[in-house]
Image 1 (cartoon, rainbow, N blue to C red):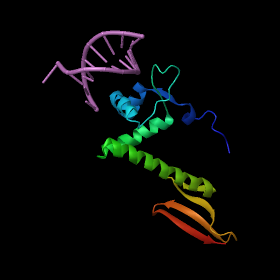
Image 2 (image 1 turned 90 degrees about the horizontal axis):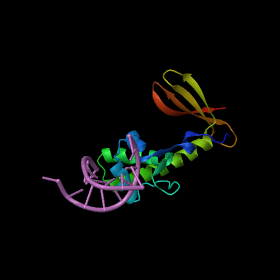
Image 3 (image 1 turned 90 degrees about the vertical axis):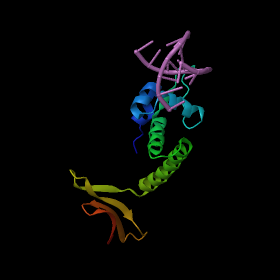
Image 4 (image 1 turned 45 degrees about the vertical axis):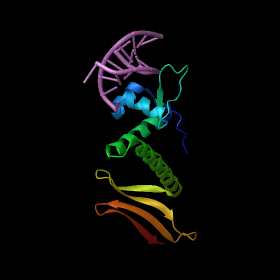
Length: 142
DNA sequence: TTTCTAACA
DNA sequence: TGTTAGTA
């Protein structure tokens, strides 16, 4: 497993102006959200100016998404947190079961996900299929 | 030029 | 929330 030493996720640090332009959320809102504890600025140096990391950038986008869907700010922030936890659980599952993906159509992005075996005897091979019919499971008895 | 806080024609 | 004032 390669360690993301130079990953964008780890290195990205932006100011409030850029975060605002990138997300479409006003600087006024960003400061207010911070005041309410929905987001956090990574206090840089003598915190003359706010700096935000990738996590915050992502969360701001999520909150805005729910806000646009009609949620109140409090509910939107709550939804963003809830959604993040759901995604983390899904990632855990995928990372644990992911074996390989064979690409069937690299233009339409169809493929077959090798999800390993369902049983310890390794007689039932589970696949996740993505094709013109949609996304579904398939078990191959071996 | 950008960001900060505080306040409201 | 937007906007603006007066700074640093």
